[in-house]
Length: 214
Ligand SMILES: C[S@@+](CC[C@H](N)C(=O)[O-])C[C@H]1O[C@@H](n2cnc3c(N)ncnc32)[C@H](O)[C@@H]1O
Image (cartoon, rainbow, N blue to C red; front, side, top):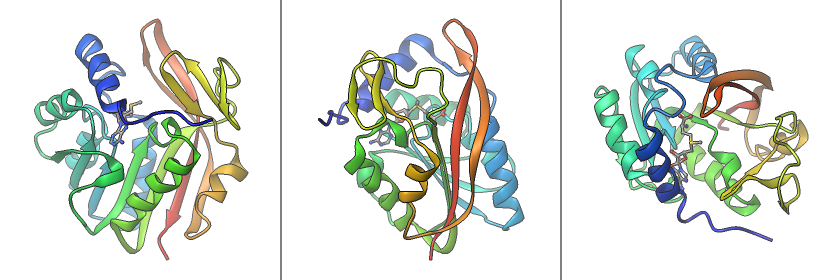
């Protein structure tokens, strides 16, 4: 069984309209981790795929990187332009980005896992196609160690509608590595990432992949 992701931008616009800076205004720990790696490799231009309202792009832009954020939520992009005027923003689907790049790096947090299997492959291919040979992709996603793993209706292997209207895929290490067989895996692992939820602070157990484009 698959599910329709064409309305995800509207879904998130509705959530941003009601909750505003839903995960707070501080950058995620995953973005800080990615920034360390990007700086170590002297990467200067960054594509931020599914950037939301700009909490992470601001970190990269303030550190001197030249950042382009893409998100399909009109509300998210409007908030991002106000929150982080240093970055460039484009309201578009990651599946159909209206520019070629190339960038030195791509970063994406908590977005890839929102798609069914065939679209996850497309998401990664579209992102990696926008970076230079030798450039790095950093993708952070739900892992099978998340507290919501296995909750709600099962839609695909390791994919559950753990929140109504928000199916999510929960990645094992093998599963995440299998998405990057065309790239060189630089580093992969699990990290705890805390942010705000409606009922207070919440810690996600995320899996990340740092992959070099061959
Ligand atoms: C869970 S939010 C994460 C936002 C941001 N990465 C963060 O951590 O603050 C998922 C984001 O993916 C965006 N999104 C969903 N489908 C998309 C698509 N096809 N293209 C671009 N953005 C998309 C949503 O609009 C939403 O902003």
